[in-house]
Image (tube, rainbow, N blue to C red; front, top):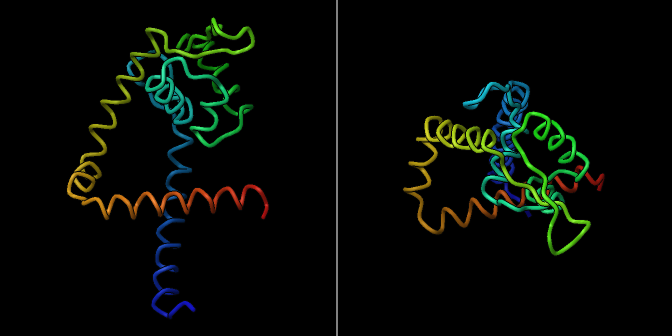
Length: 157
């Protein structure tokens, strides 16, 4: 049985969550330049970041990592290949598998995005550095629960 305090906390969390989600929607609509001539939307630069961290990743794994469909990743990749930021390579072990890596221009954007994060995240880095293992475990549990919630809503259950 949930207490009134639990309901109050959940309502407060729900309000904060929706405020952050609304702001994230605004951010998702604003492209930026990351050290190259191209404007990149957050979905594009985060795809570049994922490939930069996981050179040789395939489309299926990239989609799972980002929590989107393979079709959505393929659309973003098409744009990034056209911009010369991502290179598709055949997997030598499998004729059907396509692996991804960053081009030189993609690497410039990846590095500029890392610098961008270091400028905008100092307060988050400070909080994470001060957190003990229990705090980190709680946040991981919370984000996993939010991820499952999103999966349920997307799946219609």
